[in-house]
Length: 412
Image (cartoon, rainbow, N blue to C red; front, side, top):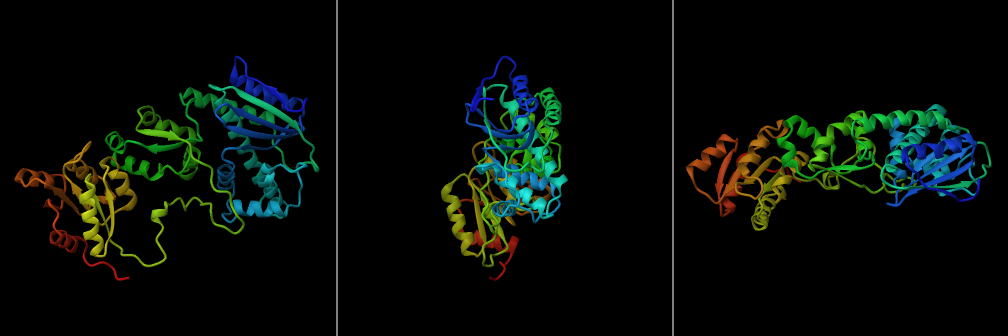
């Protein structure tokens, strides 16, 4: 096979992609195949005598290997950092000259040699990686031209573990057919869902379903990672989100790769550590009570911030009412100040939605409004408000409400 041989896709792109890989298998090719598309996505598949040694999504190698470790290993101490460290003192040497992308594979082989990973576990990881890669190739080949470039390479030693290319192709073709039959062909599992219109989502679901969706769709995980996190089949998860994706309530976006690990660092989170920076407490002790003010006026929010923080409480302002519910669920405040008149959605509607969420059902809600009318007071009570305060904001009135509903702050 000629060095740097380039192929272009033909009439049947999916079948053509499979055909290229089968050609490598039947020809017992040894070396690397780089696949790219015009949009910039790229993959690497390394073969030894036609069998797959390893495969890699070059856009997100760290995410891929972290997911493989979490999926197939029970030992939580084996992380990307350990793979990097093991690669630096590996017992097995692969391609020569060594490719940068072989690092994790060589580290994993070294852990197999030392008994920290079973050979069967690594085989399962390599199988999953190959399935994901070939699945992605089939999906991208729907609308883009795939370019294959082969580079014959020599292995210093025979790879201790390879996976059967033909078996992988057979499995992936079945997976792709199921994915396509569910009309998911244009949804990549590598995309990250983001809730763009939380109020519309809330209206179209039950409070429990909404709460569950907000907790897992945080904008920090791909569909594949979410499926792993909640132990759900990827196809079923994606199909359940399709209606919201099609209507624009949920948007799919690209997520950058995880930061490459450094020896001894803790940069990469495990399944229990997907937390935003804001949720990690600082080193010093902080007051236990949190107050959130939902008001579209920046001036009102700043006045409230001054009063609340002077009283010793934590404070968060939310000026976009459509973001109120997910922010409330994320932060779970002890007291809520809620403006009555806001664009897009009013305080009555938000108050009623809050009261239907079990974790916020008992949280005190104080309505803020420029109106002083009996009807408004009665309606506020009906939707579950705890109190009704008229604007302009008065420090003494706010302090009284703070003392009444959340008491004295914890001492530092």
